[in-house]
Amino acid sequence: MISKEKLRQILLEQENKVKNIKKHNFLPRECLEYTKKFFKIPHNIIITGVRRSGKSVFLFEIIESIKKDNYYINFEDDRLSEFKVDDFESFYEVCLELFGKTKIFFLDEIQNIPNWSQWVRRIYDQENIKIFITGSSSKLSSKEIPTELRGRCIEKTIMPLSFREFLLFKNIKIDLASLPYLDKEKSKINKALEEYLYYGGLPEIVLTSKEHKFEILQQYYKTVISQDIMDRFKIKNETMLKALLMLLLNSTIYSISKIYKTLRSAGHKIGPTTVMKYISYIENSYFLNNLFIFSYTVKDRLQYPKKIYFIDNGFINALSSTFSKNTGRLFENIVFNKIKSELKINEELFYWQDKRQKEVDFVVKKGNKIINLIQVSSNLDNIGTKEREINNLLKADKELNCNNLTIINKDIDSKEKIGGQTIKFTPLYKFLLE
Figure (cartoon, rainbow, N blue to C red):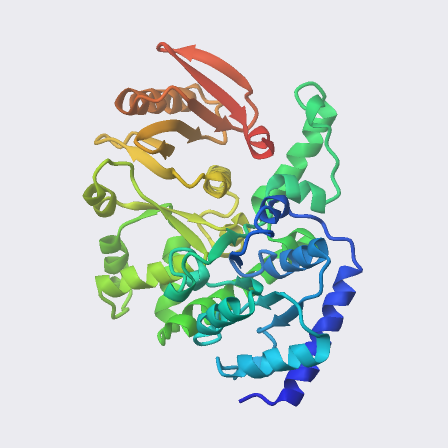
């Protein structure tokens, strides 16, 4: 049990920290206005996302916007490493003693407290308290939320900065209305886009000088491995986990059998089932996403290779030897993250491929209907490349019957009528700012 005296000290220190942070001007996240919609309903709000994506600062934004008395605690404080579910009672008693009675809790990075959800459910039911929770583990996500909280929580996943937010953080002012006409604005935005593509959108990285960006990204990576994967899932073989991660970082597509054979040939003692588990653990840390092939049958989706996309381009460049400065890969990864973050509840995302390996990068499905086919190409200067991308789109369109065809590229902004279909060519910057 943690003593009440220690809890008093920690809570007072953290309260002062919140007050000091609130004195600073926040660079607002776009998702705040969306999240505000849920403030007045009784559900608790769980804020999830990859480590260092800005969850805690977003929590401070919410605290500032609500402007009501509250209790705040950050469980990443090392003095709380032994905190157990029974300590919540003492915690609540100390909160009442120090700050009086209120109806709002902010519980930051709670995922490592055993059985935390049992107390949250109890205090929610007994005291009619609204609770905001953050965590880096997908154990808090809507897919894995503990049974006792289902139907009582709404999840909001915090992504790295969007390109619009990136421009705000860099204090880059762009007249969007003038972009199609002024070379000066295009030059400014292309320079910003180059940095965003290469170093990504994690807030601290965006605000750090270039010579330190990769060093910090590598430290983030080590923390994700140690705390969000190894500690959480009790993995002992760090060498094998890192080898698997390096294989994934240097791949665009994978199958379990191929990964298994590669690891075995490198001397790692591992079976296909363990490979599958480890990849799911990495995905659960929000570090990467798998993209399944489009098929109307679940069996096909499972047996075909999956494409890999990482939560932030900065990790690809800081850690991958194969894709460093590979503009095509960086374009595609950043487009995936934008599409994924904006999917509605009834929408799904896939890639398409036929038996001759013709491929379309993204298929957006709504219900039983395909509503978008999106191809990504960083360079359409080569006639052969442009024809290939167009032909693949038209082939997929013929099979899937979709009239919304887009090729996201570096700088072409036009529409072309080809084969009875209209194909929209959209520059990456325009797509990201829409």
